[in-house]
Image (tube, rainbow, N blue to C red; front, side, top):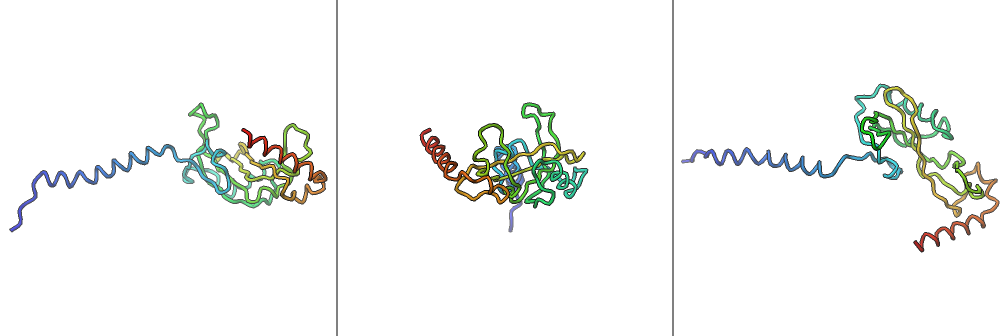
Length: 188
């Protein structure tokens, strides 16, 4: 003969799923705000972007890609796309109201775009700067191009982009400059 379950056993059985759900919520919140990730783009470049849903956008992916290519300086019109994702972009880090829904478009093979523009310096070794990543940010509601970001590395030991090869007449000088920069970095 089986004995009926007590109220205590029923309450305990009902509490287990509630405790599990509460624990999952606490653990998810402990991880902080999810950050957007894009292949080949350093996380620092994406710190003001959070994942968002495509269901809120006004312009589609294709339009966003076209606007990203058109708006970004030095990006060819046929530049291959690595990824295009929707995100929330905080334009002004100290102002929560500056949050915008955007498309973030990352380009494949950004080093093929040609010269990497620099501000200042003697420009003697500009040919040795190689793009690692290039992203464009487009407003997902208006289609306005907002901004772009590129990361490059100075590496005179790599051959220059074919468009810049004619400027690479001072390879030894630039390689020596790179060795000196590495030595200075190692001291610090």
